Image 1 (cartoon, rainbow, N blue to C red):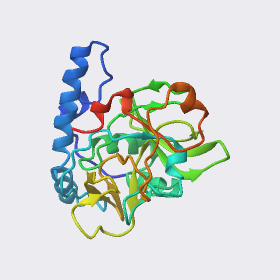
Image 2: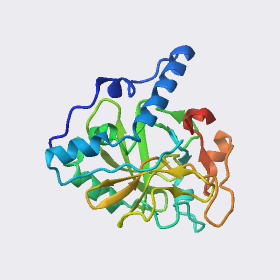
Image 3: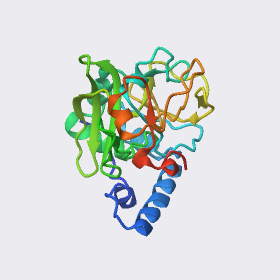
Image 4: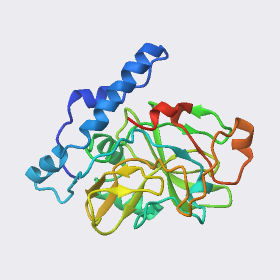
Length: 253
């Protein structure tokens, strides 16, 4: 297991669960914006280099994406594709490699929250009934690996625990999506079909997008449906996306 430096205390504050008071929520949202800007610095890379760790991180370019969007698994699996060119939605095996690189499931969640460049913010989910839950408490990411006709593998973490959990969830859930590739990207900027710009981070032998996906279109140009009411969200087997906490202001800085 790698010995990582203790992150600044303010980073832990930014992951605390939200207060229902709207003024507190707004302060917290602005605080997270500042954290996202800070993610573009190369501090963790320098820390790890000094430690002599085999795990290195590298942050390049800049991005205005904060939480990104929440997609059901049908969007992840759509033939139109949602990953930027040259990238793929991370498989169950990809996440396992990342987990092992960070020292195992018992510590990987905390490290992803504290690793500059990965931006593991707690976007919550839109569950299979259509309800928006757990913003500020949990982060979930789909893998592209199905389990059955109704479920697929995911990874999730909780704001005050170090673990990264592997579960199978109903494909109708709306989770964040992260993309990965095996070779160094050819340029600093990674752009999706809608023009969103992402950073990338190297962790071990993998290269991960530094933010959750925010594309509103498939790579073939078709729009991904959105604005579904709860009943429609719960019944559809077509791809769809939703805003974190049902708030479009949380997608971008």
